[in-house]
Length: 125
Image (tube, rainbow, N blue to C red; front, side):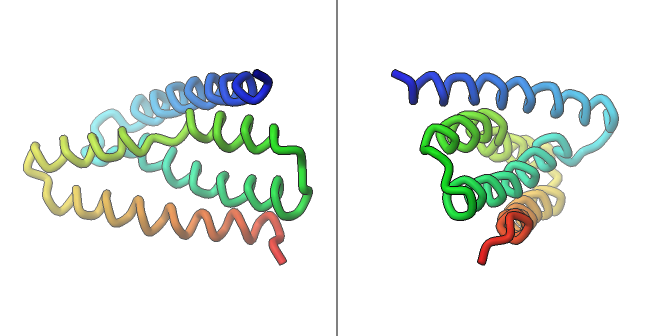
């Protein structure tokens, strides 16, 4: 039962953080045709998963409930891959084909690079 509560608690915080941050970004850039909120959340989530997994599993060797709470729960609630896909669909549907391509490629490339930076920031050896 404890592991479910870890995921539940982390997921609640991650989902709320995603909602609040995404909304703040949309309010800051209301006329953007690019899904900045989702893009930012995906890239920062990618960085955080690289950082946290390296710290929790390799460097600090913390108990498994930390991974369940912070990675499965918090980051699972925070990252937005389904929203990412839907935003790309909406962009394509609106006729912004090149912008959609930039969004898709940019999210994957910068997300992957952010994972590597997170691992490096955690000091993986």
